[in-house]
Every structure is written in structure tokens, then in C-alpha cells.
Length: 188
Image (cartoon, rainbow, N blue to C red; front, side, top):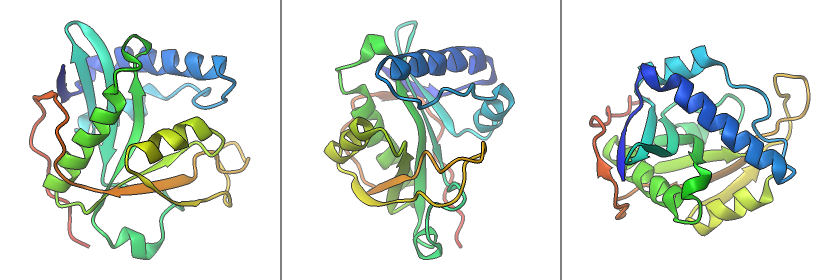
């Protein structure tokens, strides 16, 4: 399997990929990702070289967004002073489920974050998706806290506030990495 930077022409493929994941989550009884993701927002993250795709032949096997930007209101100022990168939108195709592609992608992200100068690989997960939370714990993340105060865009409680982190470092992920070298993190 190959990991590469997503390109602007991948927007429709990635949006369809997310819709597939949302449908699967809905079948499991989760409300995660039920709102459509804006194409223009996805394109901005692709242009900023934060979106990556794993391909297996012609199939898209997985995608991940890796950024140095934390979502507002989740991490403390002290935590934000620590060099960190943040995982978003990790998605694995149902055709590739059960092969630990997501776990390997987290290992790749930890390695890439370390090369950029990050000490921590961090993420926030859906607060009601306990299976996802356990998945991250099984992959070496430690739960930091769950943020429920604040409000989501629709005026309700925060829905993605389960915070976790693990140290960065090199771990064998097995992907052929065709991504461009990571940019060093800006110093605070």
C-alpha cells in the first residue's frame, strides 16, 4: 500500500469516502459525521498539504488529516506549548477493515509528526463513540480528558471532545511513503 499527499482532484473521491464512513457509522447507531463535510474546507486542507491517502492498487484504502492546528477550546495553553500534531478524519474503507490499516496509519502519523519536531500525536474523538475511544487506547494513546463544555456549531454540546495523545516516534508502518517531507513545526 502507498501513502501519498491528497491532490485537489481527489476532493470528490474523499467526500464520497467520508459519506461511506458516515453510512457505516449510522448503521452502528452513531450520529458521527452525519453532517456533510464542506468541499471547500476539504480543498483548503488539501492545498495546505495536510490530507493524505492510502491507496491499494486503484482503491482508496484510507485517509487521514494531520495538522499542527488544534481545534479551539480543546487543549490547554500549557498543552499547546508542547510541540504537537493533531490527527483528524482518520477513515478506513470498509473493504480494508480488519487489516489494521488505521493502526498503521496512526504509526505513520506519529513518525511524520516526530520528523516535524512534535513530541505528541494528539486527537479528539466523538464523545459518544466508545468503540472508537477503545480503538485509540489499544493503539497506544492515553486518554487526557473529555471536554463537554462549550457548544458545537449547531448550538448543542461538544460532540468531539474525547482527548487522547501518545508520544511520537518511528514505528514500522509498512506503507510505501510517497509524501513530501513534513514542514518543521513553527516554534511558539
